[in-house]
Length: 263
Image (tube, rainbow, N blue to C red; front, side, top):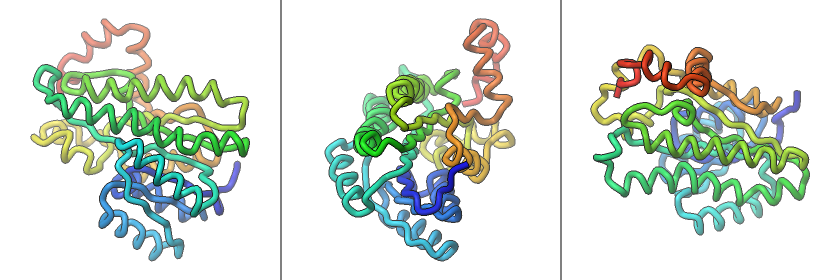
């Protein structure tokens, strides 16, 4: 098992939720987390927390991953400042739960710009350096929604399906070049993601007892950083359902019934 000590771990969407947990946990393992998000004030809070708990001052950069020019400029600066990015965690993303017929185009475009194109832009910014070095790890936060879609998440699920397709192809492209690609496919995580995605609060209320804790997901990702795997699927029982869906979709949709309509 490799060590994370002195590894530069770039994490997008690091101003809260899973990204903030992962940054702190990586620092506790001796890594240098590099934080990216749009909210500078929140990044400063995460930086202070990491410094107070680990003594490591994690650099941060304000970044909107949906702006490709900004991604290029910021990561160019990061590579000047930090010399290397050993691990990139593409965690930035958002969802809005609404039926496709009612979805404003700006929500559709925004989800694809952030969840898919932003992820690709960040990957492209660091991948050439990893290939030149002959080592690196890209970790893409996808979702169980990318494997099995449900009502009111058709667009969000489409973005995560795209992340899975991109990651699987990229993995094959770089496997013989020393670069690993891992996809993380969690079910619902108890974070502020749902402040925007589920404004009614109904979905969270319905599935709250099944929600993953960000600390648990973070620990699984840390394990993969030290021993790369193809996929992380959480929780295990939800992954059984999504796997079954690939084999017998009609039956799973029929059996899913009301449970698919929690939003």
